[in-house]
Image 1 (tube, rainbow, N blue to C red):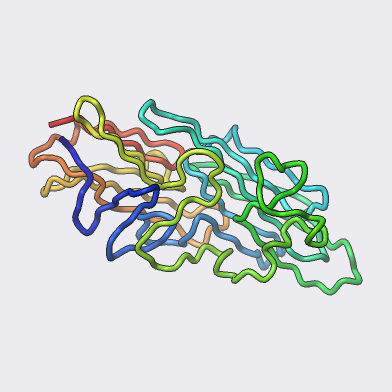
Image 2: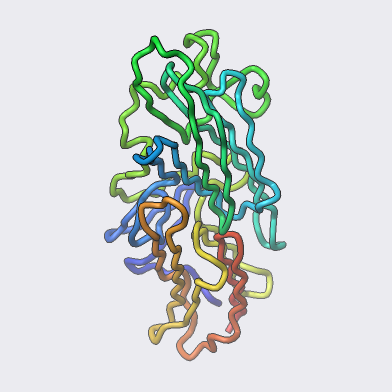
Length: 286
């Protein structure tokens, strides 16, 4: 029976927390080995001061992404659905998050949205609305506030308490909490934007026939840039190459050992399903 590896490349799941050992690179994904860390990346573009945001929604489909602008035009709410693509998936996933301006001098004037390979990318343009307020534009995101008309799915913020600004709860946050610079650590974090379904980047299930099903998130990786291979020691290694897109600071690479099979196992027996920034493996019994 194929199984999950127990060496220094292992990923173990306990109480919904994915634990890995030394050599760990990023808290958002146990298989990421280089590139910008974190579930999000934000950038204030120097040439026009637009806000660029990269939001990892692995498994999300292009047609499911919805964007709402709150009435003050300070924040945008982004939602997306990742359907249960395969019968062995534990469930579907729904995502939701918010980003936008934290300043009082501007409002959002235009939104461009690009969706692909499990990543939502936004370019937010802004315009000044109060010439008497000193320019102090800043932005934030990746935390879902609460506004009255979205109270049934968003939790945490009352705009009447915080001066009416929909992202006031982000003011004063350490910038490292907003720029995708997750520190090194032995435990991966649950995805903060998942509203329903699994918050883990990894899922495994032993099948009734003795086989193994794996679901591994690698947001940003096109379907033709995944590989799965049986190594000489019987471990199954997966890799994914996520090229930079739009204004990403760089590409990302994923790599790791995800299962162990007997020596001599035929690589061609493994069924690989790769789409929307997620790779799924079905490993038949030996």
